[in-house]
Length: 183
Image (tube, rainbow, N blue to C red; front, side):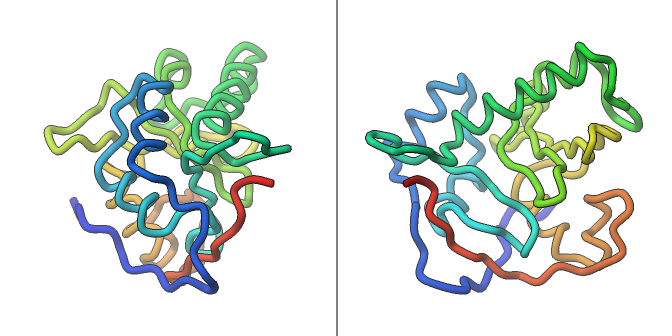
């Protein structure tokens, strides 16, 4: 399992990089120790579009913000969306999901196509990483795609997105497009 983050080429000046204090506060509020590779990613890159497809939420200072892509707030929104799909019975659990698993997942991002990225807090490795799951767009499929966040990022840069997205037949670029995480 790759434990080092891939090098992403920023397309502009980096912004919205959280401090250790913001990361610690997010960890406390989520009741989840944030994985080391995620913490490194958040401090290194901040908020933005990863590999032209994935928005990874990071902790941001929301004081005075009209809106934000704060990790805790975005995670709660996506978890609510998952719970509604379970309650409404419009989710496919194949190949790796169950109702119980989906209810406990902790979302941390999404693709531009509507896929949800989440950690399973019960699947924590000795190195502090959590298994990464992708819930397909329109809640079509729950797939365990990586043993940790760094492995997930490395896989999405492989041909056909490294199998992270079930029907992908394209290769993503190692880019990072910085974006404001609040206004």
